[in-house]
Image (cartoon, rainbow, N blue to C red; front, side, top):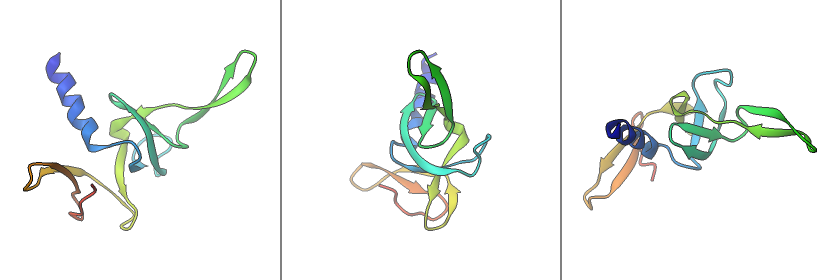
Length: 107
């Protein structure tokens, strides 16, 4: 059980709140937006997977539902392509994120 929790945390470190992402699977495939929140394996992406929910005394409310983290990929705006993220350790022993396609440092 502990192994699976640690494995999920490794995935979560690669994508962070505010990162530009592209949806690579599902009915919103090809949509480019940014991450609003991350909760375990689910990611809430701005203006993606928006539904109308019937709420008592408030009529209909638009709500953004989360999608699985495997259905999104980091988006490079200058290349206009999706890329994977590599986590590397620099000379000061700090972890940095790099785009695998271009080798550019993300942060």
